[in-house]
Image 1 (cartoon, rainbow, N blue to C red):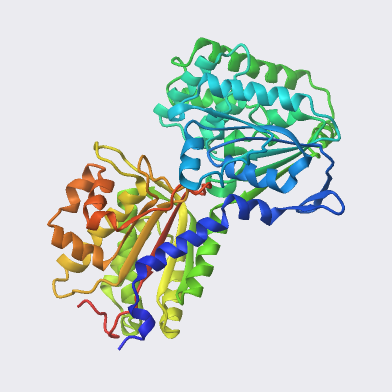
Image 2: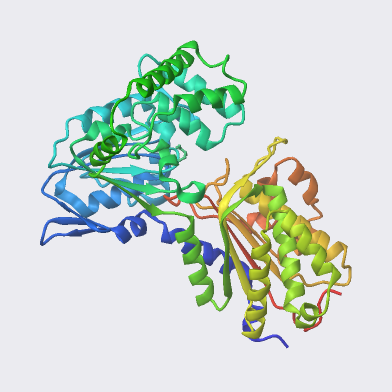
Length: 532
Ligand SMILES: O=C(O)[C@H](O)CO
C-alpha cells in the first residue's frame, strides 16, 4: 500500500508550485527584495550602495513588465519621485485594469507618463516619441538626481532611438530583416546597440552626471544584463565590424537600407583610423572610461533561477522531493514534451530499487535517448541519485525546469509553446504507458508547462497541465491528439477536453522570466518496475 500522501491529485499542486515561482518574481517581491528605502535617514539602499533621497528621483522604464515595477517603486518613494516616463506595449493598460482593476496600474496620483506603443510588437512612431521624451528627460538631470531605470523583455522595441541619419523606417526594416533571416536575440540586439542612441549604454551616458540605478528583470538565458532591452545602462563598446559580419553571414548585407550599411561602414572605418592614430596609454584610457560608469548600478532583480528556487521550496513544503534540473532549458515544444515523458519513464524505472541495482537494458536505452535529447549526462546521474533519495524518504520526486521553449509553427491552429509542450507530453504518455504497455492502467505522471508572463503565445492562458486523468478524458472524448499537435492547435484541443479544465490560467502576471515546467512522478505502488 502506498502512503496516503502519494495518492493525492498532483495537478493542483503542480499549479500551486508554479504560482509560487511566479510570485517570487512578481514586481513587488522583486523590487522590495533589493530596494530598501529608509525614511529616517532618507536613504535608498541597493545592495552595498546608498543614495541620498530628497525629491530627486526620476523614473524611466521600457518593457512588457515595467508597469508593475514602476508602481512598486513609485509607491515606495512617494513624494520623492519628481517625474518619469514608461513605455509599455499597446493595450497592456486596458488588459491590466480589466484583470486587476487599478491595483497593478499606476496610482491615481502618479507622476509618471505612460506611452503605449508598438502595436503587435512592431517598432512605431509612438515608441519613437517615447524614446525622444525619455532622452529629453534624462538629458536635463544633475549630479544630485537619482535616475531609476526599469528594464524588462520587450524593451528594445518599445524604445526605438535610431541614430541620425538612420530613420525609424530604416531601423524597423533592418530589425525585421534580421528576425526573418534567423538572427538570434543577441545578434539583433548587437545591431540595435550600434544603430540606436539609447541602447548599449547610451541612456546612461545621456543621463550623466545623475546617479543611475538600473533594475533589470532578466528573461534571457544566462542573465546577460546587456541583452535585456539592448542594455541601455550597460557599458558597451561600439562593434560596427561585428554588425557587418552578422549581416554578411545572414546574407542580408545587400538587403539592408543603404543608409544603415553606410553608417556601419563609416563607424568601422572610424574605429580603424582611431586604432592607428591612438597614442593613448591603454591603462589610462580604461581608468577614465571606468570612472564614467562608477555612478551606474545595474542589478538583476528577477530571473528564472529565483523562480525555480521558489518552486522547489513550495514543492518541498507540499511533501515532494524537489530537484531543479536546469534554468537554461531550451528546445522545441514537441521535442521537449516527448523528452519529459521519457524522463518520467526513466524515473519510474529508477524508483524500483531492484531495477536500479540490476543492469536494465531499457534504462540504458532511455539514458541514451535522454542525453541525445539534451539532458546532460551529469544531470542524469543527479536525477538517479535524487530518485534514490526520494524513494528512501518515501517521497514523490518533483523536477523543476526553467528556460526558453521554441515552437515550430507549421500549422494554422491556435496554441502557444507551453500548451503544445504539454500536449506533446500527453501524447507520448499515451503511447508509452497505454499503447506500448497495454496492461498498465496507471500512469503516475503529472507534467505542467507555463509561460511565466501568463500569456502563452496568442492564447489568454499560461499553459496546461496533463496527467493520467487527462488521458482518461481524452479517451472519453474520442478526440485524437496527433492532428491537433501537428496543426499547432494545442489550445483548441485543451479547450475541448472537460471544457478547458486542464488549461492553466494565471491572468497577466506582470512579470516574465520565460517558461517554467514541473514534472511530478509518483512512486510505483509496487516495488517491481510497475507497468510490466
Ligand atoms: O527587448 C529585447 O531586447 C528582448 O526582449 C530581450 O530583452
